Length: 159
Image (cartoon, rainbow, N blue to C red):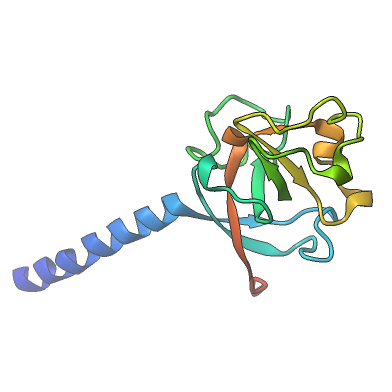
């Protein structure tokens, strides 16, 4: 009996460690709204890999903390995603040091800038008529990035 218990513990502990690592590195986020149509639709679920801001690239779809909507101050997004946070899913148009993209350079929030400041991003929704993004909000601090969208997940099975 003791041998079986030791065997179960020897298998269960490494599995628990792997699950813990995966939960810190990946998160599932549900899409709300229409700002990323046609790429993503309300109700879609996406797999997000947490990445440091320096690894975010132009063209990637990212999950960023919505500005000014935090209920409490729980720390940087990579430490604690949860119900106290509001998230936006947007496509990165420029990173720190890049020129402000011409298609948004004349918008009020970005008009006076030639380059994206270090530590910031320009993010845009794929559906510009329905998106609240850098055209209205300006530059997004890159420390507000939760991660990069890897893929859309299959729909959840409802019971």
